[in-house]
Amino acid sequence: MQTGDMELPKVASLGEYIRQQRQQAKISLRQLAAQAGVSNPYLSQVERGLRKPSAEILNQIAKGLHISAQALYVQAGLIEDREPHSDVLAAIRADVTLTGRQRQVLIDIYESFCKENRADTAQPPQSAEHLGDGPVNPLNGITPDSREG
Amino acid sequence: MQTGDMELPKVASLGEYIRQQRQQAKISLRQLAAQAGVSNPYLSQVERGLRKPSAEILNQIAKGLHISAQALYVQAGLIEDREPHSDVLAAIRADVTLTGRQRQVLIDIYESFCKENRADTAQPPQSAEHLGDGPVNPLNGITPDSREG
DNA sequence: TCGCGCTGCTTGCAATTGCAAACTCGGTGG
DNA sequence: CCACCGAGTTTGCAATTGCAAGCAGCGCGA
Image (cartoon, rainbow over all chains, first blue to last red; front, side, top):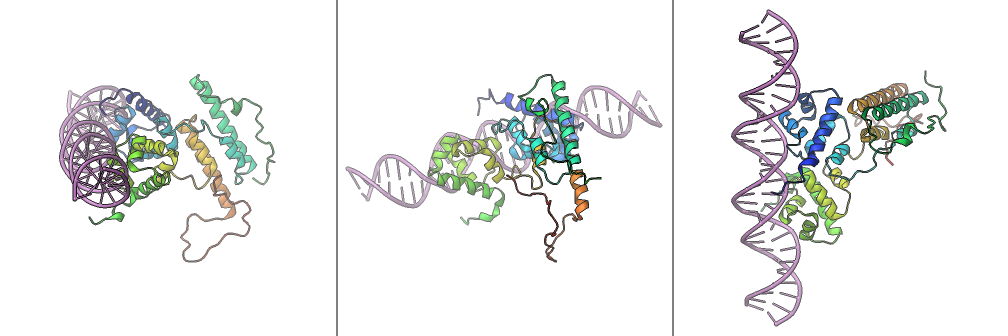
C-alpha cells in the first residue's frame, strides 16, 4: 500500500485514546507495556500513531488497561460502533447476586462518574441524558433487601 | 506435501470458520478475496491457518462474508466470548465513557461485593473437582447466572 | 486431442510488525 | 559534580504480513 493518506489519522486517534486511558489510570508507559506483555518502545510508537498494532497486540493492550477489547477495536475503526454505551445500570439492577444496598452503592458511584465526566470534558460525547438526568429511580421494583448487615 | 494440519492449531479454527462461512455463502475463494479486498493467495493461507491475519484484514473478510466482525474476532480468540461471570462486568468494560480509573474502581467494588456474597454462601474458589463429584449446593437460590442473554 | 476458464495452491519479495539495545531528558542523592 | 533512576523516545534487526506472479487440477466446447 503505497498510498497511505488516510490511514494515519485513524490510528492516531487510537493511540491518543490508549494514551489517554493509560494516563487516566496513572500508570507509566513501561508499566502498561509490562502489564500488556508488549515492549515499551512499541507501545510508545503505537500511542503516537506511528505503528498500527495487530489485533493480538490490541487485545493485550486492552487487557493491560482493564478495558474491553471492543472499545479499542471501535476506536481503531475495526468494528462498527455497536451500542454507544451499554446499560451498566440495567446490568447492575438485573444482577440477582447483589444485595439492595450493594446495588445502590454501585449505581451511585456509576452515576457520579458519569456526572463527573460530563462536567470534565465539557463536551458530551453522545446522548447520555437518559442516565442521570431523568428521574431515575434505582429502587424501582427492587425492594431493598435488608438482609445485608 | 505432508499436510501437517495440527502443527498450527491456533488460527486453524479461525481459518476453518472462515472457509465454512464462505462455502455456506456458495462463493469461491477468489470471489471472497475480491469482495473483501484481499489477495486470493493470502486468503487461501488464512483459511488453512498458515497465516494470522491482522485486525484490518479480519474486518475486511468479515465485510466480504457479510458477517459481524465480532464473530471473527471471537473465533480468532481476540476477544473473549463473553465474561463468564457477569453482565455487569461486561457492561462496565464496554462503557467507553468511563475512564480507566473509574472503570477499575467500579470493577473492584463489584468484585469485592461478589466475594463478600460468596463468603456468605461458603463457596470455595476454583477447585479441581475431578476427584470427588462436588455437585451443586441445594440451597443455591441465587447462583450467579452464568448465561448471557 | 487441444484450448479456455475456473477452482485453489506455491513461490519469491516489498513492506510492516514488534522487539532488544541504546539514547535523551528530569529529578534525587552521594 | 557525577552516579543513579525512571520517564519516553530513537535506532537497527529478525520475523511476519500481505501481495503479484506463476503453477497444477478439473470441467466444458470445438
